[in-house]
Length: 365
Image (cartoon, rainbow, N blue to C red):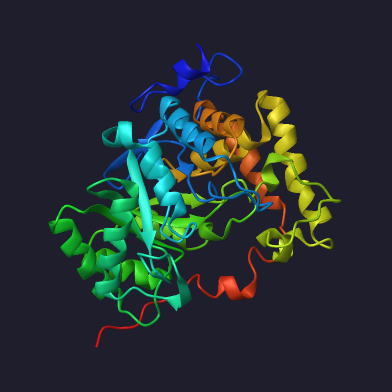
């Protein structure tokens, strides 16, 4: 079966592994899965950096459009962006690229930073006041060239706005047909419970990968309890799990990895044990390291969807093909044990950025 043929499979059927026939008692992996009631392909596409790369060079816009269109051809149905990306630029790129197949895909976007929806001017802090949410959504709809956002997230919890007020604004937008589903990103657990009680939440978006397994402690059990899907940003550890980084790697000014503790010269050599593990499994399964990292996430729960971002066509094709890889039950147990035996050194983000994660919304007065 060709790669395109495999990626075209729909429903919850099994798919053959990259090694040929499926091993006996293979762990189930489907090419499509549910985020709440929303069905999507098992690997999405993050449209975050298509206005730039980590090296701050400007990608060729027509090529970015082709990558998005080719992702759709590969079977990808979840395209994730936000007003903050650019700001505003990546929504415009996605809107232009997806125009011809808009009704065949799920478009996710986000509000929540203090951004002028018209000019893109980014002011300090967050803004989830209901009137601002509605203005932000109007701007997103125009840039995305659509009449509705399939999945709208609060990008970060606003410590000044009760989550019940946020949910109320989303309810209004749902009544108008401008938003179909909603979610939260990097929120505190109590805020998720309150949000879900006010208006059922479809998906949570959190960083989650072999390199950052923090959601396993609270977020994943809570999502399972509430029937909420998990969408994983940075599923390749900002490129680390692809094997493109070694002990001598240093990052350009402006690259967030240059100020992340896990990539410091002191911690990087230690953390490369994880890359060695992924490479060994890639050789064993005759696939790429990136595909192993993505397939591992998919195998954790049937309602987890990674959204790797890229500005390179070959990487998009490679990432999308991870949906066809599966592990036997014994392989998955072995890989899980090996991954969790490696203690990653260094913080995942700078303190100033981490301060926006795990925040609890204030109580409604």
